[in-house]
Picture 1 (cartoon, rainbow, N blue to C red):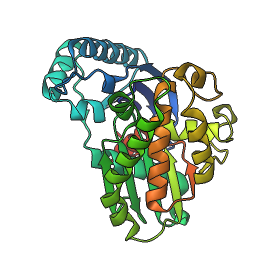
Picture 2 (cartoon, one colour):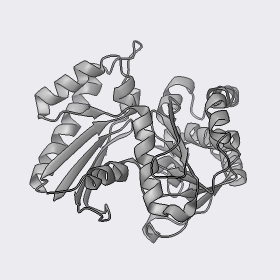
Picture 3 (cartoon, one colour):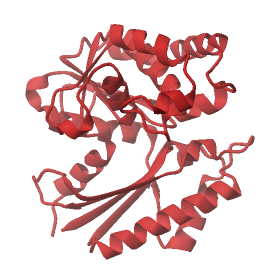
Length: 309
């Protein structure tokens, strides 16, 4: 069965098409995405404004047409933090369906964390022991920990890199005082969740998923994406602290010139780095392994586990 998975995230609209099989590896045979920055398309009342809705409808429509051309037998379309937190999310879902025929499913933050954890567990296997997983998106931060395929605890906080950049930084580069204030805010938001997760015991393996963690690892010396998914990549707390002091003084344009940083995400990498550093510190993590699988793979695995006709 050819399965199309459409991920309407806070940064991008991303479609992968997979020739899925029960027990098979979820490797995409086609991969398409377009930047949207949906989390930045919110007005002062928390609504996705008209311009943002038009961009979303256009992107979903293009993805749906591509899915048909690729011969997808089944199409799974979901949305995460930006749509989930929008005041007018119901109207957005209805309008997208009316214009494109695609009904987006809104994943809860906890479900997003659980599916991402499943992907990390399948990638590393049972020998990893307790996995603690961190995933930084554009709109939210997901945290989970557990010894099985389903985490014992899964949390989602509105600490996404795009959301924090939009809400906290109004200069380029950001003012040092704003960076310090944001760091304090992130620390405060993490306290309760970190205490609960640490009470379960230390991780056998601490894992980072998402484009933000891959970018941060690349900036601290990890292998480029061209080296393939099986190369071990890590991110250390000391390396991350050193990186923050460097990139927080740069403009977004200068950051975009760094190897591994895309022009569409260079403006939000400072906030993403602050979230990563604070999360690792709160959980007592000195080193993360970067997992190439994340939410989309978790969605595919959940579907194939149910069996395919």
